[in-house]
Image: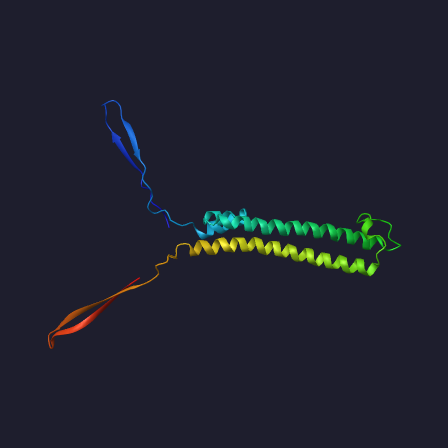
Length: 188
């Protein structure tokens, strides 16, 4: 869908040797009143919350950043715990001397191998689940902006009623003459 520019250029002759131009800028009436849903979803994927701001739903931005920030902080915590338990598990074997995952943290010294392994596996699974949740939250942010951009042009005012009008009418027929009738007009 193309747009036509409504700029006009007028030549004013104030003197035969000089000419000055005046530009008249008028509002482009073909510009859409609402944002394009594709551009809104693109903006929301670039910077989370940007699509909500474009849709004039800035109140959702703290929710988006609170959710993503909280999940991000929890994933960092779980990753640190996972690294500690992984190091303690691999260092718990007597034959292991390479310390490739770092030293065993002091609070994990002396725990049995099976509890270290089960905690390590639990923390790894929980951390991976949080990563998936962060991704889904990011996508949900974009989907919310996209759906609202599509629904924004709909009328959601309090007056969603319809008006109906009944009018008596006469229909003229060559065989029967004037026949009484009723016309019904419905407007939304």
